[in-house]
Image 1 (cartoon, rainbow, N blue to C red):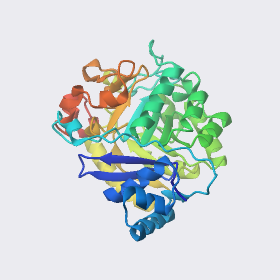
Image 2 (image 1 turned 135 degrees about the horizontal axis):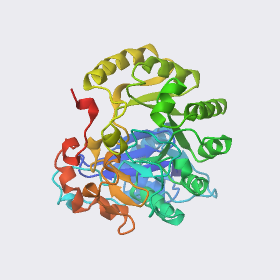
Image 3 (image 1 turned 90 degrees about the vertical axis):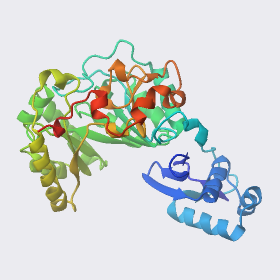
Image 4 (image 1 turned 180 degrees about the horizontal axis):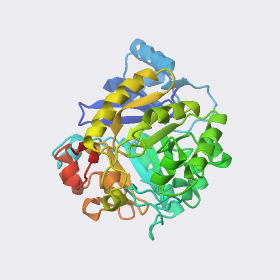
Length: 405
């Protein structure tokens, strides 16, 4: 018998040339299909089936269907299933019809592919650049049960990537219970942490729940990192976490904000990441939002960003056999250009925003998950301004310092 791999998410996108796709949430692989092939996978999501049953139900050619299923077994999207073995049906997001998109001027996905979830605004550091102005939790943050409902909604609509953010996620009450629930959620899961609270228990929980850690490290020395993060000792605690992660053989990444202290330590940061076994290192630009809009601390010029971009290409090639180095300076969090088309952000109180950099700005608030489910909010007319253009920085009132002279 044949069955759909339980890690697979099926998506149909009518606005993008009627694209039929399957995403393997564990291997982070996407495959695209013709409609008749997709129907076979959709059928197998409901129950394991024999070849003849599939062909009879779908009125499909037997030889062609067998060749397709054999290819999918080889690629891992379909598995062999023995009769009598336990099987849980794989949830397939409801298919949206072309008419559902009629009110909007630009194409967008039927559900976000990536969602940034801010579990709490609480944080144990005092970073001068924090766009979410982490420190104390919001007074009206979602309860544990409300977060469980939100996470289930993300799976229900077919979100492919979930990024757990803060504040500091490990400051969230009952974080380990939240992680445990995420174990059964089918999507690629990443947690972005400052590393200061990553002890053995936390790392084991991430491994058990298939959540990839990304540690924020903003300097190759304690002096630079701690000045940027606002708390003495933050660097040493992050280093202790990296050693633990390395000892346990966990795949992880490092995010580095480019600022006036770290811009001359870029290669040192890459070498440090290699030393502690990181799989990748990404360099993130600063935007004058949140706390940075007031402090304007540690800024670098647009010209320096351009020169850094040229250096990253060279450094990525130099170290490509040892670590994956981002060749560009990326936006922190989800790119604003994709806001409302492919991505969105959920604040710790359930409010939905186009992107991380406008978190808490009520002018850009789409709605609340306490008032409406995510699927309804994703098709809210509040998105119309964001779906008119891909040039969103000025519209959202975000000043990206990488673009400044």
